[in-house]
Length: 119
Figure 1 (cartoon, rainbow, N blue to C red):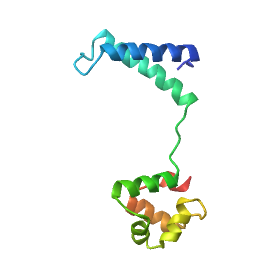
Figure 2: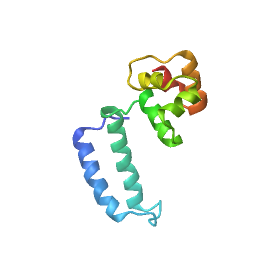
Figure 3: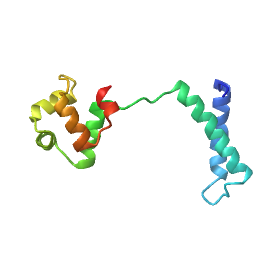
Figure 4: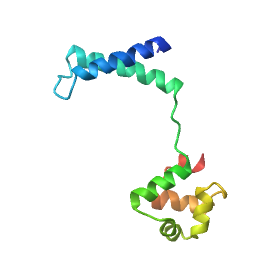
C-alpha cells in the first residue's frame, strides 16, 4: 500500500463531491462511476486513517453516551452501579479513578468495551 499524498487526498475529495452528484442508490454497483466512487473513497479513507486517527472514545464519553441511550440520570446510574451520585459525578469529571467493581459493572450493565474502560 503506497502512501497517499496530500494532493491526491484533496483531488479525491473534489472528485468525491462530483461523483456524489451523479451516483445514487439506483446506480448499478458495476458501473464505472460506482467503481470510481469506491476507489476515491478508499483513497480518502487511507489518508484519513494515517493523518486523522480517531482513537477510542474516553470512558467518560462512553458512560455519558450510554446514560443518554438508556435515559438514565446520574442518580439512576448510581443505583445501577451500586454507588453514590456524587461518586458518579467524580468519575464523569475525572476527579476519581473507577474501581475494579465499578469497571466490571460498567462492562456488564452498560455494555462498555473493556478496551475503553482500561485505557
